[in-house]
Image 1: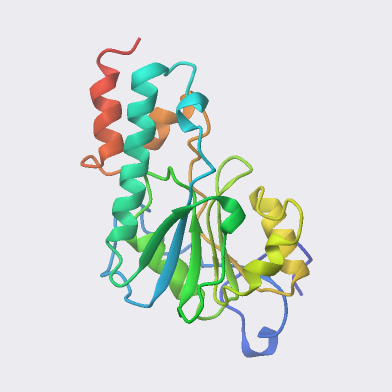
Image 2 (image 1 turned 180 degrees about the vertical axis):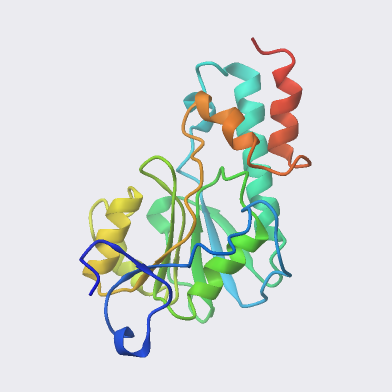
Length: 226
């Protein structure tokens, strides 16, 4: 029996289908997050890119400041949007965290929150998130810091309950606890390197494809940066 708070390896069996667990895909056969291995799934999904998880340029100083910091932050956003736009049939909006999982009326499909600057994001990672929501109630993608890069719900209505829980969307740990309190089964997505400070810029660029806007921008600025 899995201890509370410990990750569950694999998908839930029928016997645990109604049990709140934290799940994880098996680590075997993991594909580099920046290199898709298949055509993205066409399952409907509404995506909100959180506009108020910003201030990225300020976080990059030091050593990046001014125009170079703004260029790096913008490039990260471009790559994030590019990955989402590659998903057929997905709807995209940008809005503050306060409106996460807002009522979309008759709109159907799963819902996914994304951080705005995830340049290493790929259509393959997004497809994995939606695939996991066939068997789990929620998916969570943590970062190397305390944050998260993605959080998704199979039933977006659960988001209204999360919004009533103070601090539930603040970080990955709070999201996990809040989701389990609601009785949701949570599957863990791969942990991505957080773009939390200027020291993270080159490391994140190294995780992106060479033709990404972020990697190209960092490479261009690298020649003039000490």
